[in-house]
Length: 351
Figure 1 (spheres, rainbow, N blue to C red):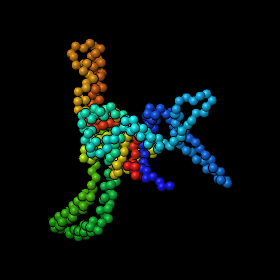
Figure 2 (figure 1 turned 180 degrees about the horizontal axis):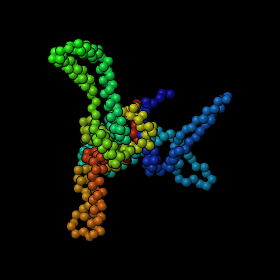
Figure 3 (figure 1 turned 60 degrees about the vertical axis):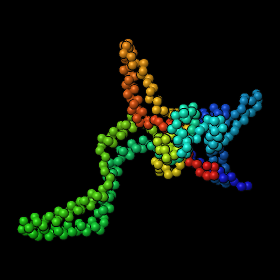
Figure 4 (figure 1 turned 30 degrees about the vertical axis):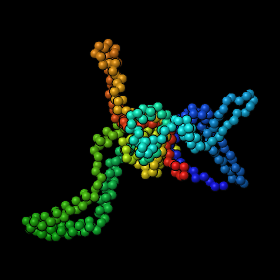
């Protein structure tokens, strides 16, 4: 029997709780996780135990008394694909991949329709912004920079050109030590100083990594701890011709297939070379006129009671903090923010 040319997916992010919730709303099926079935195989004196993680789905109406309930067992990958197909079949999923869709995302009327869209899918080049990782790097950056610079210096010192220059300086110093006339020795020291300057310049030119001032690194860590602790942003670009159009969302570390996110960074990098697909629930489609919304408009009148004045004071403080949060949240037109359900790389004939 000839095998179908199916597409295969490397799933590296799955928000299981939200997926099960959405699947239940779409199909009415009750799906639970954490179920497992095991089998033990006895071969001579050896024992092997296999655990199979599954999703259990109870679907249909209540059975008559005494009738056994039917359970459907499906692999989690099948559930992911079923979810995507159900969203598509029920008109709850819109694909924003490609140049044409990137252009449409900038259209005001289309964005208004997008606000009523439940899920979107996008495939394209992406960027991973792992702020806790950035903070960790900043803590070690001075030592790393010093290590690189010292390594570069050691490499220069091992070259024939450097060794030859050092020998010339030693020879010149030995010759100068034999000159007893002070004035003559001073005259001969000028070429020696020039050679030493060349030696210093040779090392300096190969020290490329500049040190960052401590206050900058301290400020970066404070900013991350205050406004974006634990945040991992994924930005997907539907088209490289419209780089201002970004579909992005926050990835929770506990939902990565491999909990060690460093493994993902090593495998794919912070800027993966291959297209990545993200499927998520639409959470924000900002428009330019959204800035007109002012929740503090009720306090603009000058005639306020003492209680209203106190409330305005407290809420104004929050309003000030919100400005900082908006700065780091970076959700502005023509970007779209989603709550990611699935992130994966698709390969094979089904693409």
